[in-house]
Image 1 (tube, one colour):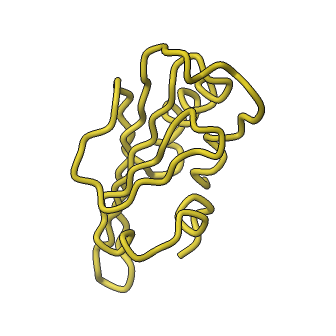
Image 2 (spheres, rainbow, N blue to C red):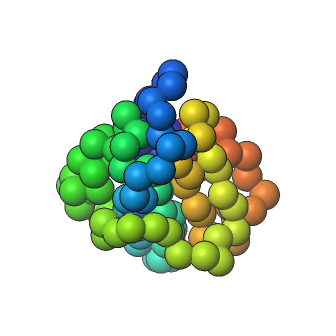
Image 3 (cartoon, rainbow, N blue to C red):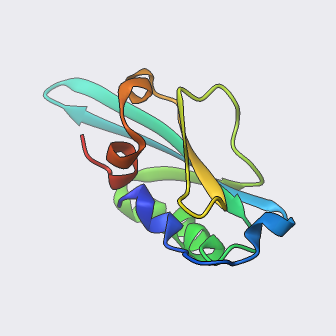
Length: 112
């Protein structure tokens, strides 16, 4: 599941005019060739943005993809990389050290 899907809104949705923030904190853990690989990211968006419903649905459906997801009202600080949504209504925060050197396009598309 690419994180870009959470930011499908386009055009003027008046999201910058306020509204509360909703977030989805996501953590994965996979074992590959005997090594445990983990990742941690958090997406947040204004609740009045067009894509807010999509973020909520993705967060609720995340366990189907082996992701531990927690809905909240904002992402924690300490991120290694922050990628803003194209329309400015939200952002995805990446907490893994290797994210710091990756482009937002690569991170949001879910490429390795």
